Length: 286
Image (cartoon, rainbow, N blue to C red):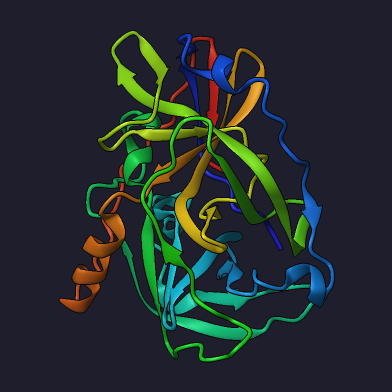
């Protein structure tokens, strides 16, 4: 199984402000832990591997009995930019060591209409890098319980991520504690980290992700309940330090639900343009 690999956009500069990494540098992240057993995976059965035909895989999470939340760029062929036929996508809920809690096909796939795969600046697409998949049959199992979504977390908040990725495609991995480092705002001179606030910016996270982690749910734990506050869009580097970029959900989920209810399923084709040259921060969609 190949992992999902999108284009690399080099030449983007990531600059820090005093309210960026410094405020959370003292916080301790936890490492990845492979969820190899049923006990390990309890509570995370609704996270699954999203097999994209023969084009690799991403990660997705059930947010309703027939809806999966993932990243928009997962729905496009990385070589041609053409949208992937939804009928070739499979959601493997709780996939672990050759077995899944549930196997479902996809009836419709809807990327955010403001997301355009390829062309332009990759950074500027991250705030809309979110999609919903409608399954061909609902999943109604006591062990596979859909997650609720929640508002964006604040700078310094603890979050967690469950994902599949290269070299760990056969079982999900949990990073129980990583942190929100700030938000990313696009400026002509580069990208500046600022405290999280309103608007459609990108979350900058300390979470450990890799190819295949695209679409992975970023969780907050509030009142004893896991809620999805973001999905993983990309990995990046800031001054040599690895970070991840998450798409804040904002009103995206409600908007996409409404579009699906209206029968919308159009995915935009793309004019793929590889960006190269320059130096500074690195940006990769995993």
